[in-house]
Image: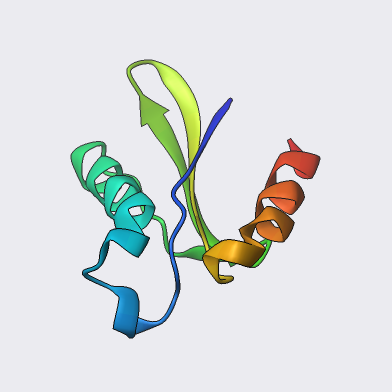
Length: 79
């Protein structure tokens, strides 16, 4: 399984800024490949699916970008 983590900041103030480009990429991938990223765990929103015959997990940490290491570590630890 591949993990694709899109970094960003969870508050709406950052929604349309360069600080949320990672979230935007994950959202586009989720839409294109019909992956629901509404599950919550690991201090993140995430979803599992298939992209080009490869199992993937799309992840949007819900910590601020500077603290996203904690969320990413939790995701990778369970894989």
